[in-house]
Image (cartoon, rainbow, N blue to C red; front, side):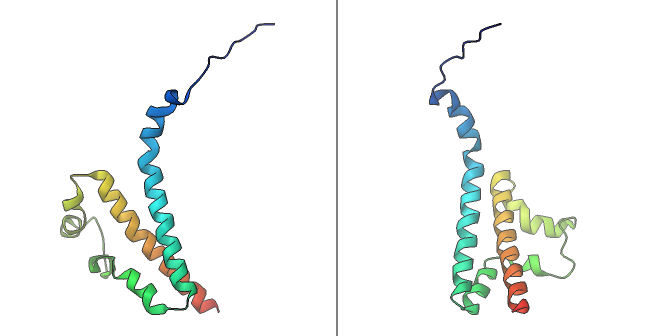
Length: 112
């Protein structure tokens, strides 16, 4: 029977990995906070406050026929943030979170 001795592993051995995933967890945390905020606004029956959340999303995202394939649309929505791909992704993710929560709430209102 072979015997294996496991090396002693410290928290420093994980620091590089933890640093690499910390931004992902920060984005997840921000999204959770946003969802929680919108849910609390909804549960207090203040429809106006929920609609205010949608005002944070630029109007271009609600235009009929919106498509990032269109050069002008892409430039208007993404180009300023292209200097930081992570920032652009976080921004788009934030807008998507707002819209998804609003859709879920609208479905819940219609179902009631």
